[in-house]
Length: 552
Image 1: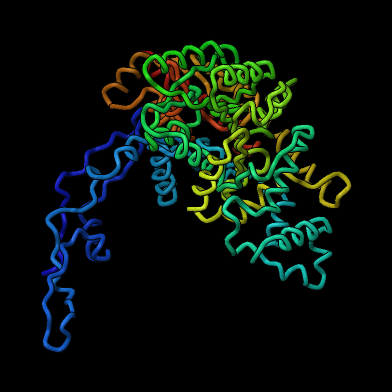
Image 2: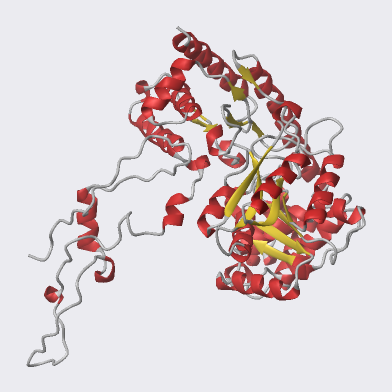
């Protein structure tokens, strides 16, 4: 009598396979809701408070049978935070969900599709596509996670001397090892390692560990910033278009306003400071408070690497307009273009004569990209410069709510910034692994871009850095009409058809932002080098058939 099926008062609304700015939400069936009702604790079932009926033996006992179910679900899509519903993240949207369904179907019956496997080119997740981890990082992590190995007989034959020394030093400066909480900003010793790496990268420019937060990936640093800076919809940030949707998603989540500025595709995705000025002036005229400028260098999804002169223009603009510069530099190890090198914005700022008291900026770095690709470790850092000490105290308070970043990620981030040095036992192998991965990524980028540029109606700028190509595609009118009928963005419909015909997963440009009337998609070049020609061949075959069908 007390287990009845619950039907939501408002049936779940149907969601199209892909919307330009939509996240994908599966709708539970009545059966699953009924199951959750039977198993969930009372506080989650939407039940009425229990009636109080004292018994003769126990005056204050309550029978479970006295709980009565409510007439409707207590938590529905109609009464959750609207900002969560507004937040979009295309990189793991409907197309990826469909890819998961196809992958499961292939396991059940490989004959269902004209391909043998799904190839995930939608996300920068190198090790999921076969990239091997850097040996030095994994050896140090192994010893930190299992310190008893350091005392084992024969350990000197299993692990090089510098690995054992590095692990022992880290363990000696951590309280309780990798299973204990650390300081909220990260272990001080590991922050010192990161600071030393930043100083070496920037030619000796000082880095104070008090300015460093170790984080669970660069994304957490972005969340800290948005939570701290965004007060309401009148606070705005300049964000590139196209952009990594982390920034649009967090601005939506915390109630801020995104001010788009458009990168110049025809000039290799360069940044036009005049467009920054236009967007800033228009926003201020509309009553917005422009708080910061976000720069992604090297670019995601564009693969562009900024020239030094462009970086200097950006710094000058931020100084003149009083804006915080947020430098997303997670691809700093991924620069392939001849004559281009990575220069951090912090170095550019200091070389231009601006000190910590003259210029406010934030730098973000991650263990997920580069040649290391340790995405699952969730390691990263945020360096804040030129912040009021009271604001830093608030950031510290914010980070302390989460207690601490994970220790494996902290250790990995420290090793990324302070790798083996020439003359140490692990250096030759580390150098070989690093150089092999980066050289292969460069070759793969050229193969992908050349293949895309050979397709009818497709143009793709060279990938100067990062892990992506972002081709523009001219879509036939028939496809545009079909997309309008289906409720999908045209580039999303193209990507869905590509997936269903080839098993290749890419992300529509509409999920990153693009100039009105243009269509793109983002693809990684992370599949194994031996698989890249096959990926290009499948794309080529599909695109030829697609154009033949839709141009009729």
